[in-house]
Length: 112
Image (cartoon, rainbow, N blue to C red; front, side, top):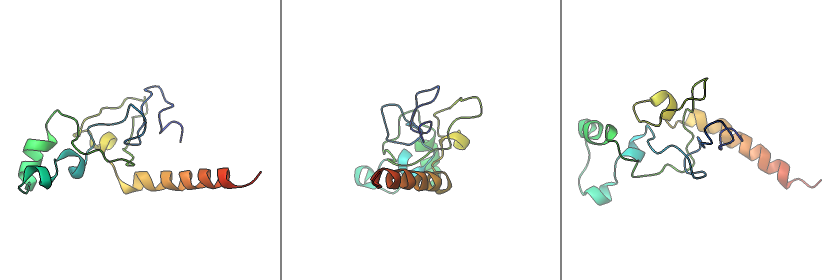
């Protein structure tokens, strides 16, 4: 858990929204496209890819609580949407972490 939350060679949290240094180019449509409330028109699949996925700017929506794939075996991390192995937020990445946090929370709540 410490490694995921930033106690690693990059001092980067792979848990989006946690700490000061976390991924800002998550491979996720909801993160990388501005809300329809602001755009006032739907974004089609092609338009979403061409105009939003490939843009250099940070995600307009922060997926707080999402866990990205993380670094490679050499602790290299490319914070780019196209690097989906590292930057994609998925339920199968996040679910075990939720279990770990629940266990740690339960351990703290138990009287000594």
